[in-house]
Each structure stands twice: as C-alpha cells, then as structure tokens.
Length: 326
Image 1 (tube, rainbow, N blue to C red):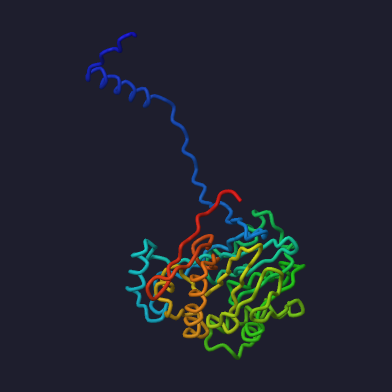
Image 2: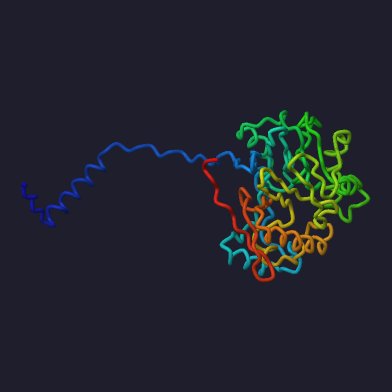
C-alpha cells in the first residue's frame, strides 16, 4: 500500500489560507428570502372507523399575563407559572382546535372558530383556508355541533354578508346556551353584551336548522353529548366512539394546558359561573383520567390531543405524539 504523504502543520495552514482566498474570489450566491408563512394546520387521525381531522382556526391572543384571568392569580404569579413551564411570559396564546369527523355516513364539524371577526387577535379566522387545505369542502359538512355559544366556537356559522358557510348542515347545540346567548338582558357588562349581539347574528338566522340535544343523548351515531355547565350555562362536551375506541372533545373545560390543571379549582375570567365550572372540570377530568380516555382540548397546544392523569390535587396533561402516517 502506498504511504500517505507526511503533511506538516505549515503545509496545512498554507492550504487553508489558499482555500480561504479561493472562497473569497468565488461568485456570491443570493440569500433565500424569508417566507414568513406557516404550513396549513390540519391533522388527521382515527377513532376506530371514524376519520378525524383537527383543523386550526389560528391562535387567540390574550396578551401579556394579567391578574385575575385565572381568578386569584396575580400578574407576577401568572408569569412565574408560565416561565416555570418554559412558556412565553410576553404573550399568552391559546389555540383553536376545531374537529371534523367523517363517520362514514356524515361529515360532522365540532365548533367553527371565530369566523371573520378579529376581536381575539389578528391570527384567528384561518379555519376555512385550513379546511380547504385538508381536502374538505364546507358544502359537504352535514352537521355542525356547537359545544357552547362563545364567539370562538360559533361565530364561523355565517359570513359577514349573512351567507351560510355550511349551507347543507344541520346545527346541534344545547337549548340552555341558545336561550342565554340570544337574550341581551343576560349581559352583566358591555363585553358580554357584545358577545351576545354577535352570537344573535349567527344563531337567529339559522333557528330553523338548529336542533337541541339533551344530556347523554347520542344525537349523531357515535357522538354523545355530555352536559358540562359552568363555563357557560349549556356548555357541552362530546364523547366520540367507534369500534371500541373513544375520544372526548373537552371543549373549554380548561383553557390552558398547565394552570387550570395544576390548580383545577381556579375560576376563569370568561366563565359564566366560575365555581360551577371548576366543580365540573374536577368531576369530568377525574373521570377521563381514571378511564384513560384520550381527549381533544379546544385551546391546548396544537393539535390538542392527549391524556389526563391525576397529579396531586390536580391533573397533568400528556400530549400524544403526532403521527406522520395513519
């Protein structure tokens, strides 16, 4: 075998210097432009024979930590809870994870996002674009199930011109929420008055298409309504089941994946009845944790799918790994 040449340190340094000069004299390549866009946000998975697709409406911006967003938690304590969990202390953002279910018989949408309104931040209102990217057409939606009548859950039913976004869909919701959120006399302040006025514009024109479900009712095959009051008077979660598999859409039982789980008795500023909401959360999260039923949480980090487990006096959320193949 031929002996390798014996390079000295001086030879190596000289070679590197020559290479550097050659690089400096080579033609420069243009830098790639920044795209400043994100990929379409949809995620597909299975629940037994049901094909499920999470479709994002974009994140809600709650701004910097403020006192009493979670009642009794001051600004500094709020920021520390975020920092301790490696979360931004500059802005609190919540996702909007709508869910489309293809049962084989019906195409069912659970919650609609904020529609065209930007009262909850500039990055909302992405549902229709993401739905299209997921290969789904609003005209093909057979049913829309509303967990509750807050703006970020039902203001995407009608366009700004009043046109039906889901022209062939039956709408399902609780009568308690319909009655409360279409009656301006229920508003204790201007903010809630604005919510009610906007919700009236979405629900009243569709009254003939709205059907009310009852607690425990399987209103569509494989989808059962479970009353979960407190966040709103008619707040409802949905148990989705197929071929021995289940997933619970927990809607707004908790708005954050850390704080109200670690301290489940905290009341949220947007709850209609915060004490009842906390009691409901503890009861239903306890059931889901004990039975190890996977959840989809509307406001948890994308795509909001995971499990709950008891941890001390509260709970811990374990996100499920995202699967890159069905």
